[in-house]
Amino acid sequence: MSKKITKALIPAAGFGTRFLPQTKAMPKEMLPIVDKPVIQYVVEEIVNSGIENIIIVTGSTKRAIEDHFDEPNEDLVQNLKNGNKAKALEQIEHISNMANFIYVRQKGPYGNGTPVLAGEAVIEDEPFAVIWGDEFILAEPPRLKQMIDVYEKYGGMVISGVKIEKKEDLKRYGIAELEPVEGNVFKIKRIVEKPDPDNAPSDIATHGAYILPPEIFGALRKLAPKDGDEVWLVDAINMLQEEGVPLYTVVIENGKYYDTGNKLEYMKTVVDLAKVHPEIGEEFKKYLKETSSD
Picture (cartoon, rainbow, N blue to C red):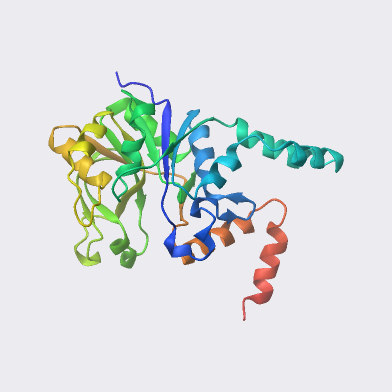
């Protein structure tokens, strides 16, 4: 029987160079989606999937992330009480109580495998989830819960799958060659990074969220830094797959993927979620209609 997933790791140490100068002093994971930062959506997905222990791997410019999930300062609490803003007070107090937060400072070579390896001392000998801090999927049930269900049935490693609707967008992602298992669950035979759309092995991108065994740490340590001192998680996953660890994907149902890692997709995300925001949604949609001819 597969061990229960009790911990999730969020890599959040990147420089956010695509959003400079905004990210010179503010982490890209703290960019606002109306009134919540990107990383809060990620944390909410983890918590709503039944995981309460969250390791966030940070860098030297990421203190704002820790402050966001910390208890609110007394001055702010008193100000909200004095202003009879009970709802706002409830919201900010809820943020710090959502989960048990552990912060680890990233060290080592460049590449998205390095922050995963940084969490080894906290995760120890347990399977765990990894979710990037600058993108998210809104789904019901949550993406990670759908992945945990697959892991508990099949074990191995699990990567979230997203169907890419536009053929020309296939070149932006790692696209999987798949073997059907059941329903929306597939075994991954290989992943082709950023393929030519005409030669892509499928229309399923596998990225964003992972369930990994503790053996991934040993695989990451074996990887010699290459391509400018970079250590990539996919190389360690491939290593374990070659050693016989099965690799699955679940194509996420009832969900929408939001890539907030580049300016255009970030703005699309803000617009999409502003239109359904309970406080401003209707007025915002009216504004969009009024300006649609501009």
